[in-house]
Image (cartoon, rainbow, N blue to C red; front, side, top):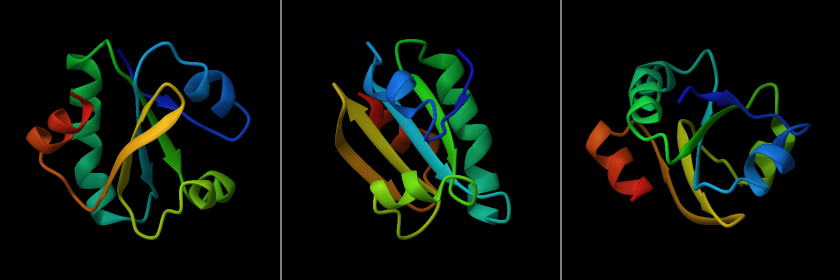
Length: 102
């Protein structure tokens, strides 16, 4: 499954109404650790079709970043049944991301 771009316009439809767990990656193009995490997120999305993986550009979506109280990036948020169940900030190894979605 590919990674989707999440915006305030599609957030409710893609994330809150999802019948699958959702992993959101809050990132920015100027963020070095975000660029390092991106291929990990892509790989996790491909290997876990039972999880919806979305990316939120915090520069373009400040409302969503505020809603999730993003204080530093990259930040990952795991959402189940429309509720945030866990978050983590900073560069994470693939194993930690996989543990988060289980």
